[in-house]
Length: 171
Image 1: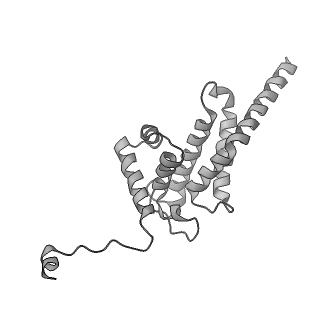
Image 2 (image 1 turned 180 degrees about the horizontal axis):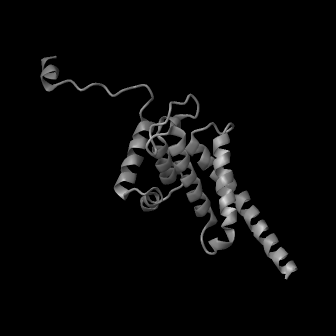
């Protein structure tokens, strides 16, 4: 009995190690995009990933036919969303404090980053993102479109002011 349990545990550990070897890099990149940290200096992303992988390992036997990558990604997203609530002490996904590093994604709110990364980088369907975040599909679509528009607009430049029709006709 003891040998059988040891064999099962060894196989479980080997399977989990193979999963982490294959998916760990992509999950770390996803976490780094979510936290808007630099790829070579990403302690928050590494912590998020470590916690998500630890939870996935704890649930490994119960996953059965489920995709462990999906499970780890959902846990990663949930931890990021929960952390955004506590970190910024605002309503969930409030406006993030300005950051000097982190690239273009640092200009987005945590909610916008989460939706954009899940939709565009991870390819998760609107319905699944909505279910994960408790948002209707049309809200997920609107947040994603707003985030993409923010990224496409150069920082520090505002759209030109629209002059009233009378002024435009006079000049």
